Image (cartoon, rainbow, N blue to C red; front, side, top):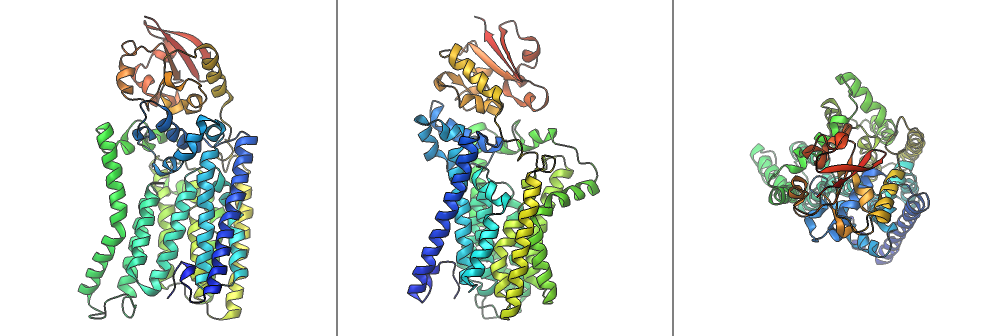
Length: 525
């Protein structure tokens, strides 16, 4: 019986050897990714804004008093920040851990390494040779996009890992239909949701795929009931039970997240409809226009990630297995992820970053071990291996080209934290070290993390923040730092409370310093 755990192999010596290789793969990838993270973060002083925000959320938990877990934020999925907490604590003694994105890099490097280790185990459990396994794994791990997102602190690598894990067990379930595989997929979906909201359409596609398998490959599968194999009623019961097992962890994770929002903010959908939510921020996204333009946009952004999927299509066509139910499930999952972002673009709820269209690559990569195992003829499998290896190289070339082009990958080419942020924090450290300063961390995170006396900063992570914004005089605020309200800056809580502050000041608040994109005001008592 196939299992992703190599230690279950009957050949103990071979099991030990494979375990050592799997560990070696993990350590090698982790060290390479960490080297990339340290080089880009520490020596090049570059970091992606969203990755920095995840680190900042973890920082607020440990450094904004009173210390409380709620400071982690209630908009973006919490797991990427939660996992950084032990490393962010080190910032008390070594600030580059947060300022240069080292803590975020540790987390994503670990998940990149885990992804490759899982893939190696899956290859070997399908009896794919070590040479083929390691070759394909190398081409995938060294893909410029995969490697870059393995160390840059973004949440994509975490959900990639969960997708690889769930696809691996989904393929095993195709063949053996054991309920423990569904349980493992279910927990992977729950973890994926705690990383990114794309887990919801992904989970829907996986669930629909499982339903299709039960409906059309029900008879004869060893894990299905032996009686009434062709009964629709029996199939319904099996779908019902499987669905409960599959979705219970995910639904529980969603429920806890909604309750967390409700208890703390009074709004159960705060993550979805607050001023800081993705729909609110996306009002400044580029307007795509017609469905045809959105479709062309999705296709253009997907090009570097689809070669492996195209190779699988070619293999299926060559072996006349293109219309098999298992391939249709892969197609369903891939199209669901692309269609989700197509709808987001069409609704004006997406910035259309390159990474939003990258899910095809890890999903297709996770499918390869199963695909090769389905090819029984040795020479045909060798040919398939060469085609898949070539497709991975093509993907690497294309992703390299895209990443080097600011027009195709604008987010990935905007890596440096504004020098103005350092100037503002330096000004506060040098001239206002003991002043009580009010600011919304929505756009000032890179400033806050550079301030020495964090105890004197009142941010949106502070207890009673909105009461303090409503009456700064009452709570002893001496200075207020606000961003330019034009564009996304108008979502800042202080700008929403005092729309005229940035442009004209207030009777009790006068401007003392102009920065590029920010203004500092002194509260008059």
